[in-house]
Image 1 (cartoon, rainbow, N blue to C red):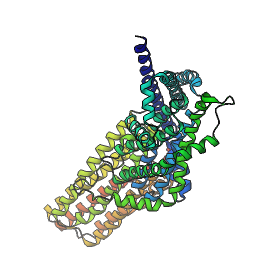
Image 2 (cartoon, one colour; image 1 turned 30 degrees about the horizontal axis):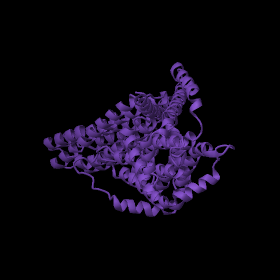
Image 3 (cartoon, one colour; image 1 turned 120 degrees about the vertical axis):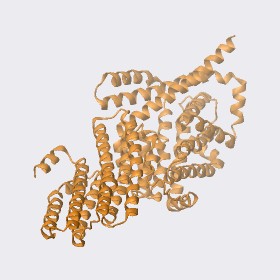
Image 4 (cartoon, rainbow, N blue to C red; image 1 turned 60 degrees about the horizontal axis):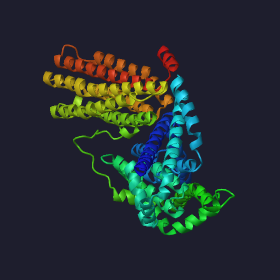
Length: 563
């Protein structure tokens, strides 16, 4: 009866502690993402050419948010948008592996005694404060405290395992490197957290239940197992996401293959550079030293792999691009969502950033629609008009997908700035959909009426309207680019085009009326359609200015509107 009770305490302590650990880790990671999302995006965006700086930045960003998968997803967005090449992203992915070792370094300290004070302070700060920054800070403390508490619970529960022959035999069976690597990979793939695997290994090693060599092998396996999360997340995603996941897998698998035969040498090296566990010596002191040695081995493994492979980033990128070639874009769905990644919903800053990229794709497509509109509108081809009208369907689909995604983002805990940015993106998406409607409905309808009336637009009028149309199209493209780049200066230039563009439209309509031979019904019919086309383009220009306005502060807009 006592043995059964002991086993009950053992397993409930082990899995209960693991539950505290994983819950706390999730809480900590979410708070870090919310607090550091904008800074993380900006940091990664600045690293473009230097591969060593890229690796360092990947390590810092991953260490901040405790999630290499989030770092990888951000890179996918940059690659897809053409901001970063695949080769440039490889070094950052390598650095992300180094950043993932920061957790192990913290867990190697005797942190369980700080758990309850951190939980108490974190709870009070996050639930009593009304300031969002303090709430995030409280959530970080609470999450870290739960992680440390879970480590303490698991450590206490595992202490009796020294007396359990079955467990001792199992640990003995994974002393060989290959089985230990497989155990680490499998467990990490199941719990989807290399930090959890490393934490359990540190607990086992700290209790003297696992040798340093076996612990290092399991930690190496965790590096492979963590690729399962990125691999699953890339299923059904753009090729850039699949390639990033493949780089992650290749880097970790090749790294393990390099080191698996050198585990004894690595263990000997970390013993020589790590604390010996105290001056008393003996088995207890040795066991006490193992957690730090495991953490150091984990860090050395990832740093060394990065130094070994960082010189081959271009070759790795070319190999992965060959391994995962581009696939042709479906002609039926040219605007299928590309950046609306659900895994970023817990990081609102990054989700909004990717939504901005998607709006850029939508804007590019709508601008192309607008450029195709004039040739179709002045020709006498109903087929061309039908083709132009059909271009609206993909815009409608992406518009709905964007609103659904931004609606999901709105359910997260947003800062005031993020809530304002979200509404701005919603309005820009709506505006672009309205431009597409102007083209596919208003211009097409007007042109069909002109054909029915057997009216023609005069060649000289077509030339003048084409000049105006080009200015409107340029304004739309520049407004969309200002949104994607968050460029207030470029947006201001679009707003300042008002007089120039409006004057051109006014001059065209007046000049055309003066030169038109009155009394000719066909000419009058053509003139009516010319004016109608100019009014539609004027409406598009007003929308372009409204899109640009979203990137300018309220004060600047008031000054601009007063001019």
